[in-house]
Image 1 (cartoon, chains in turn cyan, purple):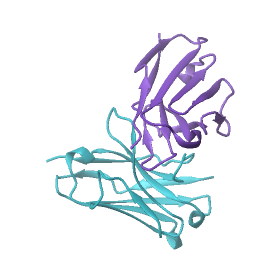
Image 2: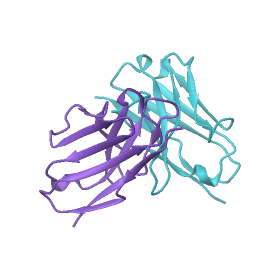
Image 3: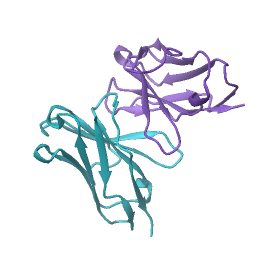
Image 4: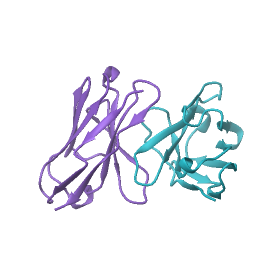
Length: 116
Length: 108
């Protein structure tokens, strides 16, 4: 069965960095677009970034452009989100999801808290 | 960016009643690329409807979607206890993909 497992979340100070990872299994990872979608407490989800199956096409939301970088390693069936210069407003649960239109498969989420 | 506005914010209903949720877009959603999700506390969103009216695999037929252009509706014909949750609409006709702020369906 399809599984997406995020890791790397935690508490970080403003201006700090974190790298989220998503380990995928149960499907052909290299055939699918992958996305990072976040959800701040009490808010609707927000699409952060997505990457094509080969990694050559990337979308990044304006709210994180220049600070967050999505990448993937198809040999390791893994998706990544490098987050730099974190701000309080980046506090959210970050989900890894398969696809870039209407994801059916989501991970359980990784909580990122940005606070001094 | 297409802004999606959901109404009402909260819907208080009893099991067995009909729920009607609205999603209005700030501009036309191309090709009816509008989806609906259900989310329960501590869980990721679950895809219910895509293409405005097509149920995702395994979704019961008490869930139905309709609409086009800027006005869309999710209807739950008879609420079951497991349907009390938050519902989000999402458009994927243009970038950025955007979500509404959600409608909470709570037990009256």
